[in-house]
Amino acid sequence: MNTLVRRLRTLPLRSRLALLVSVAVAVAVAAVAVTCWFITQKQLAEQMDNDLRHQVSSVKSDQIVAIARSCQSGSPSDTRSFPGPTIQVITTSGQVCTSQGDAKIPVQSSDLAVAAGTEQSALHTTDDVDGKAMRVFTVQVVNQVNQDRVRIPDTAVSIASPMEQITQPLTTLAWVLLAVGGIGVIGATAAGLWIARTGLRPVDQLTETVEHVAATEDLTVRIPVEGDDEIARLSASFNSMTASLASSRELQQQLIADAGHELRTPLTSMRTNIELLTRSEETGRAIPPDDRKALMASVKAQMTELAALIGDLQELSRSGLSGTEGPLKVVSFHETARQALERARLRGPELKIVSELAPWYVRAEPAALERAIINLLDNAVKFSPPGGTVEVRLMRGALTVRDHGPGIPADELPHVFDRFWRSPTARALPGSGLGLSIVARTVESYGGEVTLAAADGGGTVATMRLPGAPTPPPDQPAEAP
Image (cartoon, rainbow, N blue to C red):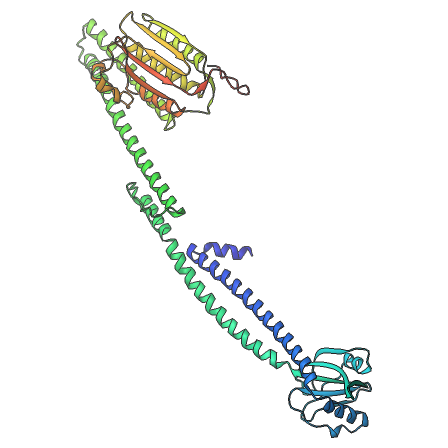
């Protein structure tokens, strides 16, 4: 059985479908044919038994009495030939008298019981002396005398018909059913192959497309979607998958190109400064102390910018498409914001940071959430004027960070969350252009949203909204920031 299953699995899918259809049809045809044969056989047998009962009553009683008396007198040669089925008279002594031209039928014990009067009738199947199968019906011999029916003692009459009256039609029926069933199975096999080939044509197209994509890495190929069945949904899912992969590849290529462009600027400047310092050492021409100090400060600033850019790229790659690094937990949003505020105060000690934080609990990854808040605060600190004020407020899951800097022009607001995008007015300031992109990706992965807008009276207000509740779930305590 296991070997058969393994062999079936090696066949193509359409061959397996056609084989299964053929087997199913063959089983159904065989069941119908066998049932039909047995029903016909039963009906023919019942009809033969009824015919034998009627034929007994149609035979003239004086003819049967004549045969019976001849048997009793010991002169069976005086019997006459009767048309129709075989008629045989038997006695309790076992003597048999059969109509002329008919072969004798062996007497059964049930026949003797009828002749002795212990049974009214008997019905059985046996072979005559010529070996022919016969259906035999035996009854008592009764003579009509002056309106009275008088039984002849110790005598019974058997009437028999050959079983070939049943077997021949049944044999013919069996051959007809076999021929019709064979034609049906062959037709079902052909239909199964056609149905499998037609039904699996979309699967063949999908297979060819997948093989083409695997060989050429061409993600622009699409499969036509027809209807709304399982194959159509599979084709639509494949098209969506290839579209997502193509978009992901484009984003990856764009990220690589943007990262290369952003890395080229500090590297070029750093190389120029280092070449100046190296040339001074090689030629022995000392650089004035002030210029050398400026060069070293520039190299240090460029290294800091380069390290920040690499750190942002690593952060973005770890978060991937989902924006998260680990499993989500119930986090105290207000405590996390408070921790981020402490770090922001260290980065801008000359600024005044005021806060109002109401309790709010969200489901997030603690480190990623804190980093997103810090990025928003860093953005506000960077663009705030010296001695300015940064206002932070958390109410019902909405964290707002408002600065009093120059603000962002309205035509630049749609681009602030793009990777590596930097306002032309802010290119001289430190930064990689990835901070707000990381914030947006992180917040969206938690089911929230982040926006930047111009604040009333000047400056910019950033709003981060996260779904949550003012109290943590009783079975899940908040994660410490």
